[in-house]
Length: 533
Image 1: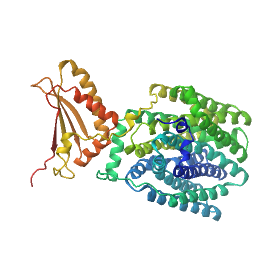
Image 2 (image 1 turned 60 degrees about the vertical axis):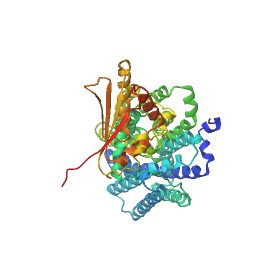
Image 3 (image 1 turned 180 degrees about the vertical axis):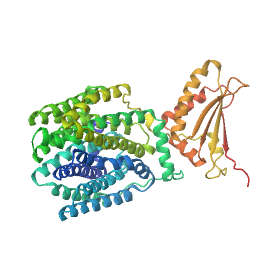
Image 4 (image 1 turned 90 degrees about the vertical axis):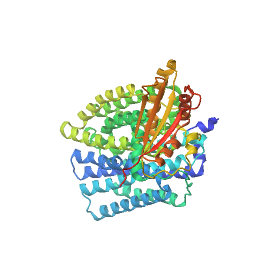
């Protein structure tokens, strides 16, 4: 049983390896958000249109929409340390090239979008691998703390990074932000060079990139928990992105302030985000999780209304402070719920799905709201997005978040059937599809309950590797039911068995316990036979 210390937010920092990785991840997260603000302000100074200003957010977020899923697959398949060193090296080179182009006086709007897109690409590629490396650096009692701190790093940097950049831009100019990006990335790269990661070992055959992508898509398709969190995240971020995208225009047009005013606005959100991170454990103990997030959505909408309607800097800063708290509460809770609800084998890929939803919604939302602002102006656009927060609240109430128990997210060590062991020495063609059939004999009184349980278990089969699943009733023996499912190969079947959670194995045992025959349910295996040449 974990101690109270293990349950505290900061307890994972007692691990030296996690502490250095977490600090390095903070540096990377700060880099991308600081750059976004400096680039947006530079785009304003280039006298670009509201759409071009909003496209900075799109250029920063769009790569995660494109590369998030492949990056999650690579994080599961290859050596993470070498992979992260390569990605961070690429980001350092891009940040340095950006500095040189700016100093040469050749920076234009399209070059700025290009470099922002490249940095966003590096950020998308490193995210899942870095996250999984952090969570694997702590013992299991500290896992929840590690997940929380990783989410705090990401969510807080989303607010604190822009605030820091705003202050630096106001006092020293955008060039110092670009230099800081290079230094922060170099510091993170240094941590990776000295870090010794744990080598992963598995008796299962490795997946390739295509198989890994297919596994991720299949898992999400058949996981209600993941689909719920993706929908909730996309809805909230897509609507709330208007405030982030249009804040430079609010600072200039509605509040008649320059870079210093913009930095103050961002600073208010940043401070709110940090306060939200500190308050969140206490809020979770006082409020039910979904109720807390509903209140946060309402407060964020109220902050958008204030930014749209009030031309007083102090009042708007207070509203943005509240928005920062709300942003952290919703984002952190959604991320923690998703992370803690899936087993380790798919966690990096599910995180990449979260990033795809988050950054895709940010990219599309920023471009959309920028286009609307071109027609309606920034204030009217914020009013429209605040009204749409009602739809976000409705979606969250219809699809509430749920923290699964440990049995649903922990892979079982008891995964092999006796029939699997008997087939251990059988030679099966490498790429031939395999069909598995399980024959049950069920008493009439148990049939409805059995079929309900079996159909629910069929979703687990499909989620973990089956390309087809169905249950049949024997027309000659009314008490006999046959479960059949297909996998792409025998290797894929072995992976499917290995992916089963403790809860999955318990469900399977319950189904077998309902069998009325003298022996256990009969399991048969078939391999596809090609036409002779």
